[in-house]
Length: 502
Image (cartoon, one colour):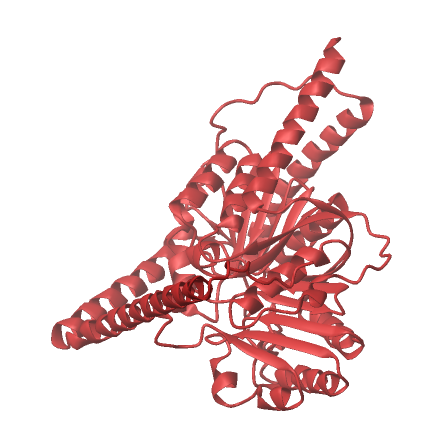
């Protein structure tokens, strides 16, 4: 075997290892043959949802964190009501906490009256216990078992902005997909649906096969509480990235493990960039996020804050080959506690498109910089690559020129647009947190019940929930003993349990 054959064999082995690592981390195989279209903001996502649901002939399955009682929510609800009256199978699963206003205002009652099936995920209950902390944060719509929508957007007019007040729409990203990935999508919905009641009939779990002409390879990562699928994959991608890792996140509160992965990637020469909101609909999260900037910046990670009202996207693109879109934020709640859904794409065309959109977003953002820039150095110098083909040499030279052009453009952009020093942004963040802690301490000192009452309630609800669960298990065990005793008393051998599976 010559040197070229050995190199090809080694490369193939490394690729197989990488594919195995990605599949095991995500808990999802790479599936080809999909057709995918990227959709941006409410202008791209909302009309696509409306048209697909209005044209449905078989079924509509929706798993949504927020289904708001507002103009857009009413519009989608009315379409679903019409479809349910036509005999279309309509199943809606919404999160109780995310949609509590709609839930309490009986917003979904007309849907139930029209024949749709509607369920709330984790409503408050005595048996809920600590499981109430986990939410269904997914944003998924499946139409006719052949079309899938996944995004960071909810069914809410908040994403459309307020033009009358001069507030632009929220920046967010989603996708429309057709192809083999519909099967795991249906299975993911069915799993969430069964967690809140009777399972779906088996016939709804089979996708309707249609010729899509797609060639996109992708994974569907359906995270459930404590599985940490997306967390493992995010860490792996941060380790695998060799050139670029560009992240957009709405509620960035990463763990020390993930922060370390980003810093090590930057020190190793990877162009790591993070785009987060400057102003957020949950203000304290943006404040906490700013306290994590300095160690990232010192390692060479570039941090940007969105200048508009809100950027809500949860996307990543690495090396112009891999990308992900979905509902998972870079924080513990999304990684470990919630139900989340993301699509990981391994397609150069879509990754390039998402990278171009990321660069466009940076033009509407402000970069956060250190007062004294420190040039990041790789932890270990990389081995010099052997000379490749003329095409590879040309691409390498073009990439180097592009990187240099980007550096020059960034320098000019800092002069034209300005950039904020990290010290000035850290001061109000730490002041806000410190002041809040001091006020909380004073309040607890004067009114101890502020801590005692919630803690007592939490422990009581958890304890009652565990007792109810124990009682349920005892009853189940008792029924099984009674059922097993009946055949013995009658002298007949026990019959195997019946099954609907053929």
